[in-house]
Length: 238
Image (cartoon, rainbow, N blue to C red; front, side, top):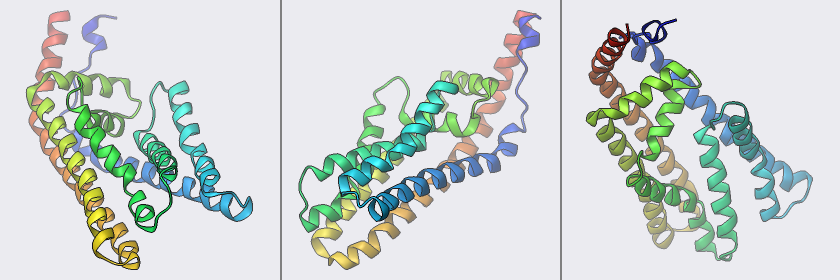
C-alpha cells in the first residue's frame, strides 16, 4: 500500500458532526470522575468510619485506577481523571496545614488554584495544557484524528488558539481561588458554603461553553488548510 493510499484526506464536515459527541464525552467523563470519588469518600466515612485523610486516600482509588488503565491499555489517560486525582492530592496536602475554619473553607479551592497555576506554567512548555485536553476529547483514541490534531500544531493560528484557551482557563481557575478567599474573609461561613459552589459552577460551565464555541470557529478556519496539507502530502507521495 502506498503512502498516498495510507493518508486519507480529512472530510470538511467532520468537526461539526463531531461536536455533540465531544460534548457527550466531556459530560460523561466529568460525571464519572465527580460521582465515583465522592461515593468512595462518603462510603469510607459512613461504613468504614475513616478519618478525613483516610477517606480522601480511598477516594483516589478510582482516578488512580482509571489513569493506570488508560496508560496501560491506551497509552493515554483521561485528563479529567488526572485533574480529579490532582485535586484530591492537593486536598490531602492541605490537611497538613491545619484546620482553622477559614482555611477549611479556602481548602476547597486549593486544587483549582493550583491547576490555574499549572495552566500558566504550561504556556512556556512546547505545548500548553489545554492542547492535550482538546486532543483527548476531540480525537479520543482515533489514531488518524490524533495525527491530524498533532499536525495542526504547525499552524500559528492553532498555537495561538491553544495558548489563549489555556490562558483563559488559568485565569478562571486562579480567579476562583481569589474570589473564594475574598468571600471567606468578608462573608459568613454559611454564605460561603452556598455561594462558592454556585460561582465555581457558573465559571466552569461558562468557560466550557466559550471553549467549545471558540474551538469550533478555530476548526472551521484551519480545516481547509489541513485538508490542503493532507492532499499535498498524498499527491507528493504518489
